[in-house]
Image (cartoon, rainbow, N blue to C red; front, side, top):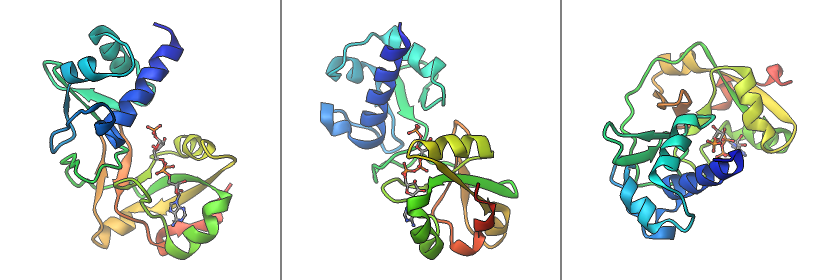
Length: 182
Ligand code: HQG
């Protein structure tokens, strides 16, 4: 399978498993799982079960998970669908987590902090390199350091997705190190 085909399938799976299952008449259960057979049957893009498994296994960010008998699939994070509850358990975050964004959002972020915008959570990375990659999707990245452990100690919940992305409801400006921008 070509890298291009894999990417196409990954983007399609992200669309139907995170945002718009109704696009192909798919239903997700309350924890975000869809039946693999339903996807193969309803998909507007043509791919086999083997190709789907390969995309899940080799995906650069491990965006998807299959259940044990590989009959169900879900996205590990990134949902905009309000109805999906990933049922993640709160975890203690490291001292700092990082968020990659771009300069045009900075005045709003200084005022309001980080907001989840269309997704279910604010997404944070464990290292600067990953945050830089996230930010560079939109232009020259600005990396913000977030005092995550401090937030946790003050009562805010953090979750870690199956693929290592840290998730939280919002980040108030006082927990963001604006000086650490690069
Ligand atoms: C910004 C990709 C104005 C925020 C990535 C970001 C990630 C604000 C954008 C995952 C703001 C939201 C998530 C505020 C935050 N005012 N702008 N108060 N607060 N923003 O895509 O974190 O490839 O929803 O900085 O790698 O960029 O899809 O979030 O620029 O892991 O698997 O609003 O998506 O993963 O954008 O990316 P997003 P994100 P995948």
